[in-house]
Each structure stands twice: as structure tokens, then as C-alpha cells.
Length: 63
Image (cartoon, rainbow, N blue to C red; front, top):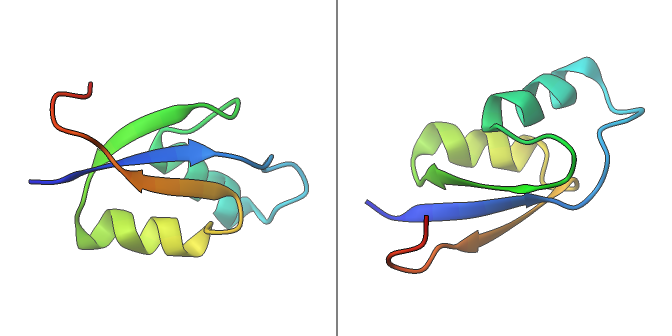
């Protein structure tokens, strides 16, 4: 299955608690990158905080 590289580009400070909780659920903190499986649940979380993150498709072999 494809993987997505999600990078936090803006701070969650001042954002609603639901946005902060979504960032935490994605595994993001301190503006770093994580790899997540590409599925409907992850896509929904990304959509919710799309103004705070940048998403790219991860290359093969990237960990």
C-alpha cells in the first residue's frame, strides 16, 4: 500500500482542540515529518488540518 509523507508546516498554537488532537493522532509534533499509510481515515485527518500540513507521496524504500 502507498505511504504518505506528512510534514507539519504551521504551528497548532491557537488552533481548536480538535485540530491539535488530529495533529497528535497523525503523530506530528514540533513541525517534523511522519510516514503514514494512505487510507480513508488518514486522508480525513489530513483534510481537517490541511492548512497546517504539507503532504507528498513517499518514495519506495523511504522509512
